[in-house]
Length: 204
Ligand SMILES: CC(C)(COP(=O)(O)OP(=O)(O)OC[C@H]1O[C@@H](n2cnc3c(N)ncnc32)[C@H](O)[C@@H]1OP(=O)(O)O)[C@@H](O)C(=O)NCCC(=O)NCCS
Image: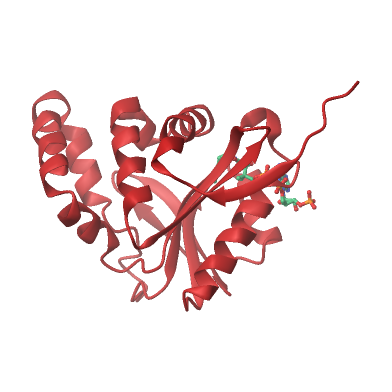
């Protein structure tokens, strides 16, 4: 008999971090954050999930996590507040990186805010930091459910606009996904060191 597939979503807890990191690792293969290693990713998602400004969901199929999303209610200044509230741990990571991978530390600091230098952007919107669905479960509507759930929760919290950044080049499927969900291009810009990105936005 064929296995019944039934996806549900729930708010993430710290117990979900290992599975979230595994999915991040598999789906964001060539991303800068992934290159910092599993321990850094665990610390990063742990900090995000326990933060009171974030909205984090997982999609579950038969007790296994098949996708996740992470957003914050207010983009402006969020990373600074995140670092402040985990100052000791971020300090330790920075110290380690200073000796093991100083270039990565520079890149991390330079990308604390991701916005255009040319177009005025007050960052007065919620921001989706991460959304991913396990490779073998993509195109089944799970990303759509996660994003809708995130939008619904943000709206309850009084958010009017949700924004996100995504790669400009070689990224047709993800761009099609965001457009299908009602997101429009706000502008494109270059992040450090030389990566062209889109900033999308949707009025909720
Ligand atoms: C982007 C991602 C989260 C989408 O999740 P998903 O579960 O595969 O997407 P869904 O099945 O919910 O698709 C919803 C809609 O998006 C569009 N879409 C999704 N994948 C698409 C593709 N490959 N090509 C064109 N349109 C696509 C479709 O309109 C689809 O609606 P439809 O099936 O009714 O036509 C997922 O593909 C993923 O994890 N990608 C890798 C990680 C990543 O790049 N994340 C985004 C970082 S910015």
